[in-house]
Image (cartoon, rainbow, N blue to C red):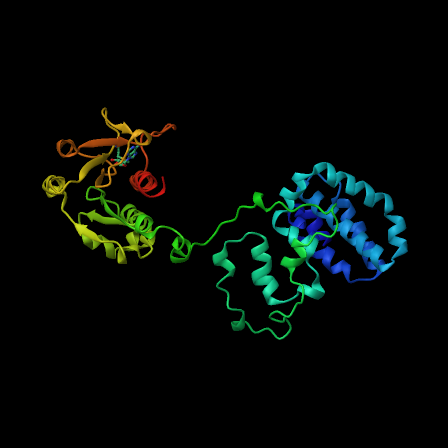
Length: 353
Ligand SMILES: C[S@@+](CC[C@H](N)C(=O)[O-])C[C@H]1O[C@@H](n2cnc3c(N)ncnc32)[C@H](O)[C@@H]1O
């Protein structure tokens, strides 16, 4: 602990709640040593570490009071009051800092909650981890000799919801934000499927795009947003390593058509006859800014080549060109990025607004 103390101050924050829980079951002398170690951290420059150790010390002193550890109660009475005052003054900032450890610090009781259900379901749930991360866990598949599956009468969730003392710090989970893993079927379940899953009248033409990696990324975007069809110049690209490294197998679910670059004009003419509006994604003198454009439902989006952009021979076959506003110094976006931004704008207008 002393090595950590010297070299990795920022990691002790995560260590403090654990120390606190270790101390809760220990003797008066041990708790005293823990408080003294953590005392150093309550004054440091690192805000998170300060808050964690202050809360942990308070918890230890409260437990000591319950256990009748009079030496500790007397010695740290003023410290306890001072820390309480400081935490109160910091208010919401304390909540923000503690975020995911709040439940662990305030409500975890090793005697009641040391079981798989608490670890894999209750704690993630209370910390607003996406439902997909904990709901599908089959606890029966775990077998640990020393950790029970469940069996706790009061689970953490109930403890956390039940605030006995009106002075308890209120846990504001709204500040939490965590990366979530999406299970598409699950996450789309409560939406209007006909609107969100597929865009049967959106075609993305990437015939002019050469890089296999860019095409892989574009295929992935098409799958995610249910684009009706992706057009490429050569389907052989689908087997290349670079394509696969970005496509994440999306080629298995996206309808991919092959149209060679030299017949792109004819293809555009054909789709126009079936009512599609042809849209060039390109920076041109006549381009409309993406955010000012109202997409028709039947759309063909044409992406340009990485080096040359959209060649001039194609413009007569385009009804309109759209430009994504830029603010930096570079001349243009990566073509996959430009495609993804445009597809998203279409999807937003057609499915979400
Ligand atoms: C790297 S850019 C092409 C090169 C560009 N014409 C140049 O002068 O450097 C590749 C393609 O990405 C798309 N693109 C990139 N930035 C864009 C933007 N700001 N607005 C619309 N399309 C963009 C266009 O389809 C473009 O043809």
